[in-house]
Image (tube, rainbow, N blue to C red; front, side, top):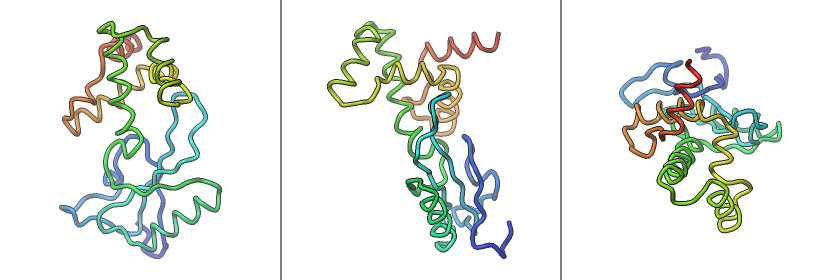
Length: 169
């Protein structure tokens, strides 16, 4: 990376920053930071920037990138270089659980979403959100998180697998 720059900023999709910069047994870091904005399918992207750092990323690079994004009107959260960062690691197990509850007959989709909206104050329910965001895309994100973490909550729910299989036909 360009060492003459205060910060080099790389936009990330699902990948880790280390895929661009390399890794060195927990000693990685430089003036490079990554960033990602959460977007649910075709919805407008959120105003949150997840700013990705490695263990030894220079503080001046983090501060410079954060200042640029904040000056552009974004909210910034700094996180470690892990697949899924903050948002996907939080919401994907919730979406998978809601899809599994639907399969198990706990309640219909409308009642589960209504319960989350009224009982928890969500703007929309987890099922309407994950379906609007594209179940096949949810499958891809969940599958990658499951493959890389082994955490069972990330294993794609049956309905996401079906949607992915239909997309591939």
